[in-house]
Image 1: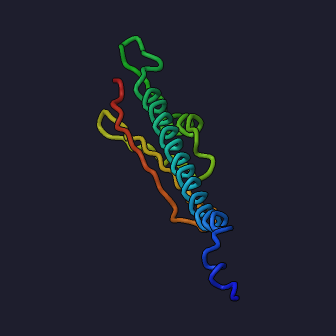
Image 2: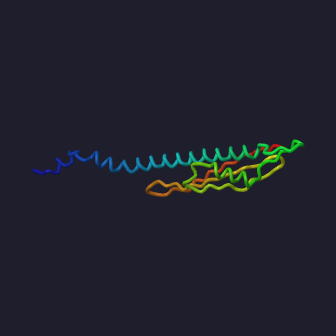
Image 3: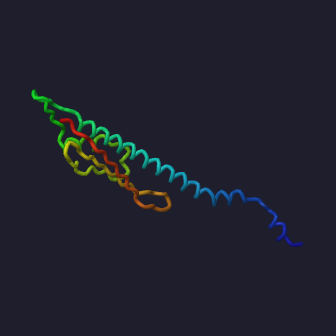
Length: 137
């Protein structure tokens, strides 16, 4: 008698083999979702920092007797934006110079994050946001 046909019908260990094939794919997918969550957190932190910078840029800090307001300097705005950002610890957060126009300022921030998928590195993701702020006069 040959044992070969009985080995073909034997299904012991198939669940282990299926798990060994599926588990790495599942772990990479879950880790990718986690990485995307980190990017969304950084985006929320960037938006919060821009909002704080916009608030500082628009308020009248010390009105004079003639009703003329003085607003914060560009360096003060950049410093506040840099300190108020959250969720940007895993990448590079930059605050470029504030652009000034006639009665407004443009605040910009950017964040670059390398995507890490455990078994391989993905492309770097760059998030950029800007906000136009009208200055009190």
